[in-house]
Length: 193
Image 1: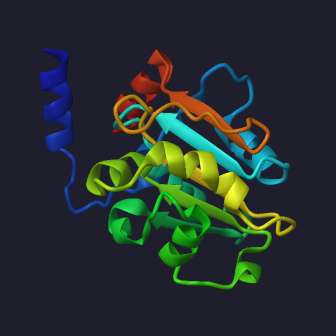
Image 2 (image 1 turned 180 degrees about the horizontal axis):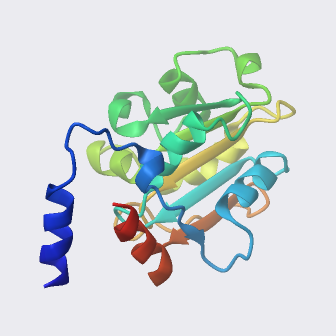
């Protein structure tokens, strides 16, 4: 019954009025962390761990998060994003850094200095490219990146089950975090939408 009223209220809204991501977006929370996702990302991007794999369930808002990070300029003009489903042919699990550079259409390592590169939809890449080995890519990327350039790579993906195996690389070079919505965030999203 409440769903029916919600839909009725939604359909009664003026459809000529635009709805923006900022009107409905609710930040997911990091599992097991007290700091906000924004605070965590800022801390990570200024730290020494070059790769962050941010995992979450389908529909949690990983791509919306990427859109917000870019539109709100969280990283002060240093972030550049690629939606991996549009760059499937660029990626080779044996040459991760070269693949990243090809996806951004820039071969010059110096151009990536002090940048945050966002690779959104890693799970989609794993599904759409049968030859691509996600686990191999993840275990090599942080070791394959140029040293001394202060490059950070944020990778978003659905949880690893079924898309790639658990990341086994040295934990000081890559960190894996999971995001979710609590019941309160889900209610907040429904109220906003």
